Length: 307
Image 1 (cartoon, rainbow, N blue to C red):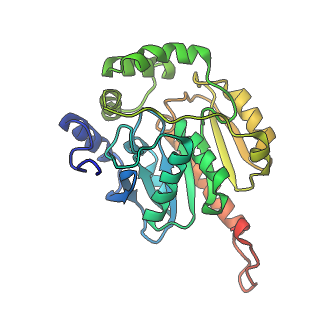
Image 2 (cartoon, rainbow, N blue to C red):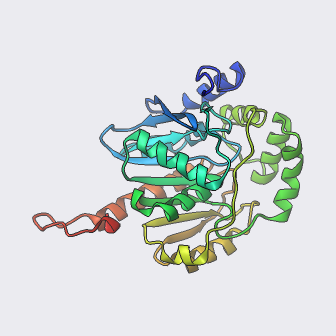
Image 3 (cartoon, rainbow, N blue to C red):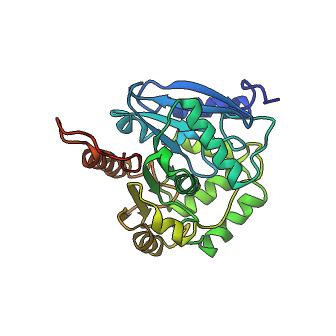
């Protein structure tokens, strides 16, 4: 049986911190609770109900609330769904079936799209969320219209040993103080707003299961992938060598739009420099939609792979 959805969000302090960040979204936010064998998935939704679905997958150690600097501009033309993953910090609740493997994780995302009524959707993932988005798009390309990756980890390059060394104390004994210290080191002091920093600290102390991880996608899979893709890497990322990762993405993803954005760190993305990031995301969504739009009066001969 799934945990009671009213108690799955950790302590009262955590839930209050979460609501404070949601209040910064700048648009009306609707709460959805999707039930599956994995549990109850909490979703923050905004934008026109009839807009094309855009699913946002947050990074590890964060929550769906972390898209506070991006939701408003993205929701002007899209129905945005920011999802709390089951088993991590957030307002989702575990169910009878545990998420133990990458296949389970992708099955959960499959069921989440079903629960949203989205046969196909645009996917945008940051960091670990980017790894999940890419792995899902490779497994189920027919369900992904466009793919957007924000400094994705373990996709095109491995973690920096220095990054892992600095993360070790936080991984060994997570505390709010250690989480904020690690964040300050990686972002060089340029992290998100005060409300988000409080939530990030609370999230570090959130009871959670083992993080599901896996290897990098196979080169043959990446070369065969044909969904419109935007990959943005943070020039000042300490998580990995962003330029090396970007070069690999260009080499393996063919027609993907790939760039290294100056002045951004791994954990600062996507809220720091949000105007730049949001502009690139919005332009990508608009340009790829225009490229696929049939000429008025002409028959639409697109196949499912082209839509």
